Image (cartoon, rainbow, N blue to C red; front, side):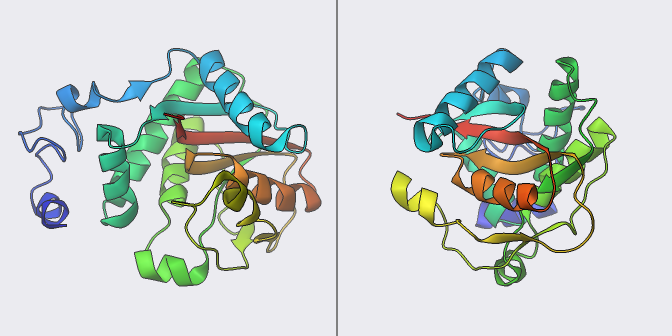
Length: 230
């Protein structure tokens, strides 16, 4: 906690190793970023995302396209940064991750027919507790890179759910079921749904179900990272 508070005061040092950042580096130095585990290609990331979700949902949850920038490993440098982003108030990291994810998506094409971007929402009580929604901040950076509208008002989490962390795969699947609903406005045809980390895809599936009921014809997925079984 103290390290995160110090970083708010002295943002020009690496969040992980505490060395001074060079021009062009943000939050993490190049050496620490090199410890992240990026996907080598868009097809590799999408393929693993599809297999991960299919292993838990079969044909129940089908999506149009999927993008994840990194593999998520427990006790990794990436996990430390995402933890700081999510719980320690460093929300600008989320916007940076979103911008990088958007640039990577554009390098592979196939984003032109996406109509809008929707972040996985937090329950209002949880948002008050954290003061911001990390997925929405990721979506802000992503929207700026893709030049697509961010529709934060569209989807709401109507039921408070416990954190997915520490739950079994079956518990993860049931926990967010029925937790989301469309709040107001017409739903666009092709929605890009955004979260920070995909583990089983249960939260994405529950949110996508609400969007489809609201009129979305196509759902694509984007996340900073995809959890790897180890």
